[in-house]
Image (cartoon, rainbow, N blue to C red):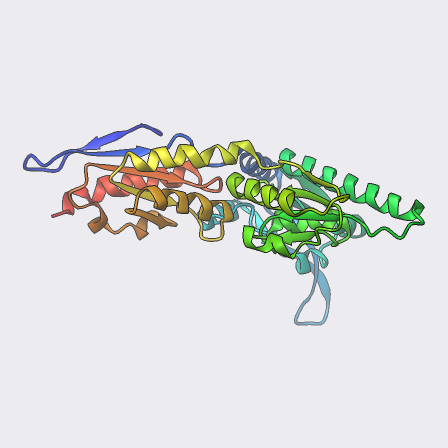
Length: 337
C-alpha cells in the first residue's frame, strides 16, 4: 500500500474517500544521501563512544564524557520528526559554537554544505568530517569560489582602478546553504531574498548572479530580466542557473497534484524554506490546503464530506511521515459525523 491511492468507505453507504500520497514528494537525492551516511556511521559506531568534550567532575578531576560519537552540524533535515528518529539512534545535533569545543570526533556535514571556515575548524580540532554536502550544492560552491578567485586575481593585476564585480546570490539570508555559498567569497557576496531587493544592486558594476539550489525558478528569471534591463552599458552581467531541477520540477507537479484533490495535507517542518515555497504553490491552486508537521495536527473536520485527500510534502519530508498521516485518517475516519 506504500505510496498508492487508498479508498476507505464510511459506514451506512457513505461515499468512499480517496487518499493519495504524492509519489513526487519526499526526500531529495541530497537529503537521502545525508541520512544514509548518518545511518551507516551510526550502525558501525559503538554506543559507548566518547565525545571528546572534557568535563570536570564534582571532585575536581577532569575526564571525558561518554557520548555517542557521531555529531551533525545543524539539523540533518528541516523536519523535527526525522531529527528525533535519528537522535534515538544516537545522532547528536550541534551548532557552530559547539563544534569549536569538539576534538577528535566524527562530525557529519548535512546536504546544505558549509563554508571553508568549518573545514578549517575541523582540521585544527582533529575532527573527522563525514561530508554529506549535496553534489549540486558542492558544484555551486566551487563555481562561486572560482569566480571570486578570478575576480580577486583581476583586481591584483589591474592598475585601472576598476571596482570588483558583484557576486550576487538569490537566496534566503541566514540559510545554511547560503552561508556556505557566501563563505566561498570571504563573505563579500550580496544576498537578495526576493525580487523587490534586486534594485539595491550597483548596475554600473559587473554582476555575476547565482541562486540557492531550492529557490523559485520563476522568480530567478524575473531577477535576470530586471538586471538585463538596468545593467549599464559596458558593465558585464552573467547569470548561472544553479537551481536544482529535482526541486524545481516539483513546483508544477505538486500544483497538478493539489488541483485534483478536494483537500490537501502538506506535511512539512516549518523550518523548511523549500516547504514554504511548495506549500504556497499548493495553496494557490487549492484553497483547502493545510500545512501540518505530523499526523496529530490533522483536524478531521477538514475532511467532512470530502471525496479525495492528497498528502504531499517537501524535499525534507520523509515518506514514513506521510504514510502516518494517511493511517491516521483511516483510523479516525469512522468517528467522522
